[in-house]
Image (cartoon, rainbow, N blue to C red):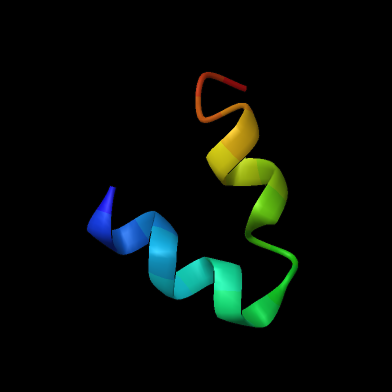
Length: 22
């Protein structure tokens, strides 16, 4: 969850947080 939070800052990583499976 921590690594995903850092990607949220970029905005593009938002999708990775929603669907990490894909």
